[in-house]
Image (cartoon, rainbow, N blue to C red):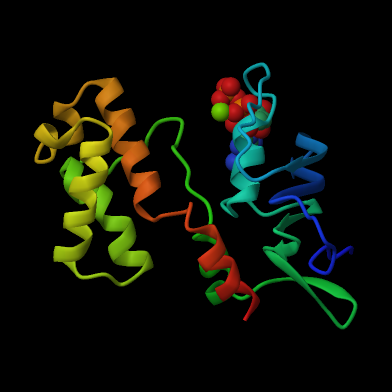
Length: 188
Ligand SMILES: Nc1ncnc2c1ncn2[C@@H]1O[C@H](COP(=O)(O)OP(=O)(O)OP(=O)(O)O)[C@@H](O)[C@H]1O
Ligand SMILES: [Mg+2]
C-alpha cells in the first residue's frame, strides 16, 4: 500500500481504486481521484450510481470493500500491521472523521432538537465542548447561513431550504476546515 506522506507534494485527498459492494451490487466500482487544497469537485451521475456511497466511504460511514483513501498522504480508516491491512481503532477513526463535514441528502436533522441544538450537538460531542461554548458557536454558524432568527425553531417548523441551511451550519460547526491542526494531531 503506497504511503505518500514522505513525498513533496501530495493531494489533500486521494481515492485509490475505491470499491464498495452491497452483496452482488457494485455500488462504487474502482474509483480513483485526487483532490487538491482549495479545489471544488462535483460528482455527477444518475440516481443510484454510487455518489452518496462514495462520500460515505470517505467519511467512514460505510466500510471499503477494496482500495484505499489517503488524507494528506496518510491512509485513513485502515492501517497496515504486520503486512495486513486492518481497520483503525474507533478512537483513531473518530479523530480522522473530524476532518470531514457532510450535508446529508435528507439533512438528517434531529426532529426533537431546535435548529440551534442540532448545530451545537456535534461540537459538544466531538470536542467535549461545554453547552454554552458550543451554543455560542452554533449561533454564529446559523448567522452565517442567514438563520439566526430561526435558532429556536424545530426542523418541522422550517422550510426545506432552511433545513438544508441548518444542515450546512451543522457540517461547518465541527470545523472540518481546520484541517492542518487536525492533521498535525493525526500524525502524532
Ligand atoms: N446500505 C445499502 N445496502 C444495499 N444497497 C445499497 C445501500 N446503500 C446504497 N445501496 C445501493 O447502492 C447504489 C448506490 O446508491 P447511492 O445512494 O450511492 O446512489 P446515488 O448516486 O447517491 O443516488 P441518488 O442520486 O439517487 O442520491 C444504489 O443502487 C443503492 O440502491
Ligand atoms: Mg445520493
